[in-house]
Image 1 (spheres, helix red, strand yellow):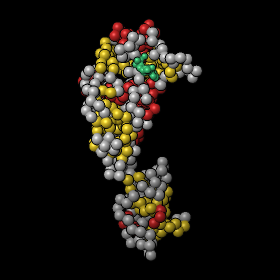
Image 2 (tube, protein in one colour):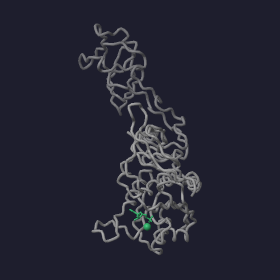
Image 3 (spheres, rainbow, N blue to C red):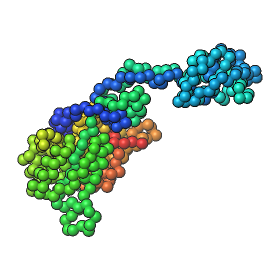
Image 4 (cartoon, protein in one colour):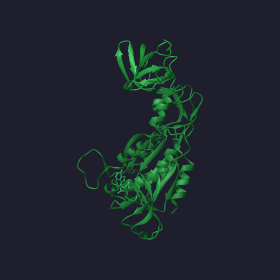
Length: 409
Ligand code: AMP
Ligand code: MG
């Protein structure tokens, strides 16, 4: 058996980031920037009003109070998207809407709530204001020439919005990885028909397609492949030709019908691992060349819980790395194991599925989700975290345990 860290290093070393491409900024959310982005434009592009009100020269309303308002002639109006070339002089007001360009000559905006329209031509101002009040200067958000984002930045929806605001029509990103997902096994059915003796419903592929998508990849469903070497070989070659990575489930252990092992051993450069973890001891990783491409293959074990743990520990970080991410791991916290997490010594690190939540003490507390068998996916489906219980007698009630957070809150 090898250490999980050795397995992980082996996998990560062979999954470098993909070659950058240019994409439209609206398609860049979730991707990683491959080059720094320098703002080409000022935002806002012109001084504009932060409020609906009246543009004035601040000096002309210096004496204004609620009891003694100052009346000014209204010499124009400007809405968002419009423009006035009327130059405002001291002692005048121009009606202005939020986002409209501040007229030349004006140096402040009085908000409409501090005014009263006397008639069509005049407004009473009830407050004095400072120079610059409610004026958003040009470049107040972003100045042209500023480096907004370094290479390696993950494009959040907000970052994508900023890219749009500076007219970055396309950006260089590390592309999304296309991942082929397939499951193997003669016992698997998915058509809803009555189960024949020995058959079970397929579940891993549905789960893995979702996990692959949740990691930000494009998932491509390659279906259930029978335990048939010729068929599996054909599907694997097709997957390698059409996708950037392959995730298989099942057939990587020591059984006589573990055809994934038989086929991949022959057609790919594989390493078959027994990792000192529970669940998910068997795991295979290698490179498959087909159609002039070489793609990584993640051979996950068939037991559903093993398959998700294996994906979390080994496939997900590698896929994230291929997409240029540097934060490839789930956050780790020292959580309190309220009920304890007992175990026996067996030379393996146990990945115990737990439910994590914040306690009144502000710390993260975890409880086992219950059934921990590698076939018991229903209990695992309630977990939002995995406690890493090192070899030994387990964690005492109330003691800390290193925990990978999948989601919290
Ligand atoms: P294997 O790794 O192929 O030996 O499978 C180990 C266990 O996982 C067996 O009990 C299989 O029936 C089960 N299994 C394998 N693939 C799947 C799948 N896609 N969905 C549900 N169970 C599976
Ligand atoms: Mg099988």
